[in-house]
Length: 248
Image (cartoon, rainbow, N blue to C red; front, side, top):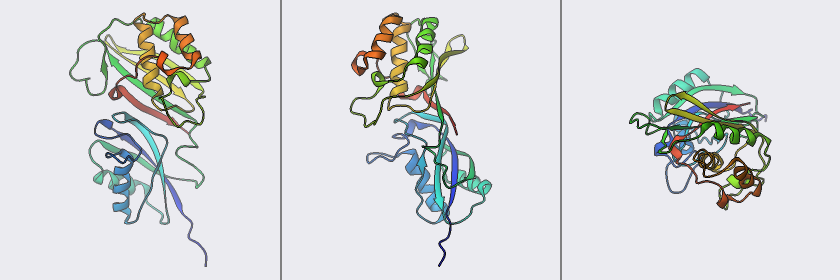
């Protein structure tokens, strides 16, 4: 008897993470992964497990998250995305679905991930859910000098959440910069081959200390190279952070 070959599909998702305990399934609350699996299992009338490109913390958003799943039945990807969107809650969207080779993996095949962290320096009620209001005058030129230096760093232990289960704290950062989009709005963009848990929010918090002149550039470099999390800045609030893009 010949085994039926399985088919692998990628889903490209966007989500507002406000109501979720992150991407990964958690014992204490609803996650985006659990909600997607529930809808897929109902839609395809079989148990479906999805594998994501990575994890996001509770309250973090995604402009682009990739995940994959396997099934024995061939699927019409246009209809799959359409029907899945009819079932998903309004804060999760399937942008597209595509058939991929069986060895393409949402997590391990990714070559680069990009995050953006949004802040605003003037009070704006329309930004409050997806951007963090700053109450200090920030030296963005100095923050950009510090950010650019991160591309020379290989070990990001200083920005790793305590007691995290990372096998290594080494990452290859290819881009780190502050971008101004309006007189009072900015975002921090960072791209790397991988990220540590809570890394981006800790990097932003430490760069804010540089922008407030609480840390000099030399201080910033010493903190990063020393690799002690308690010496780095505070972790910034989750709602300003977006997983922005994943490259394969």
